[in-house]
Amino acid sequence: LNNIFCNSSSILESAQNPSLKIFPNPATENLYLSIDPDAVELTDGDGKNINVPLKGNCLDLGKLNQGIYFLRVQYKGKYYIQKVCKI
Image (cartoon, rainbow, N blue to C red; front, side, top):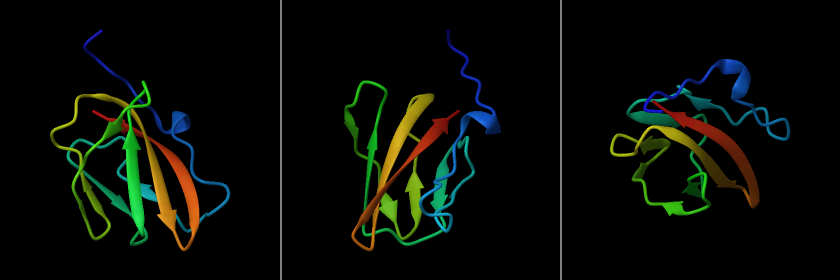
């Protein structure tokens, strides 16, 4: 129960915006975006918003518990959702 395993086949790239990449995924501390987003929102599996610091294109995930999260990225008036695994 304390171990969470993620493999690359369970992490989906955005088919609608191939220029949006998030890495590394799974992540331990920092998560980088290939773009400078207008806004981001991170939610846990229960749908609760999680406050994480964003500096430029880097999210600090260091204080989060291990698990699966959903990252909603606003960029140029559009929204994209990516699954994020914190290990």
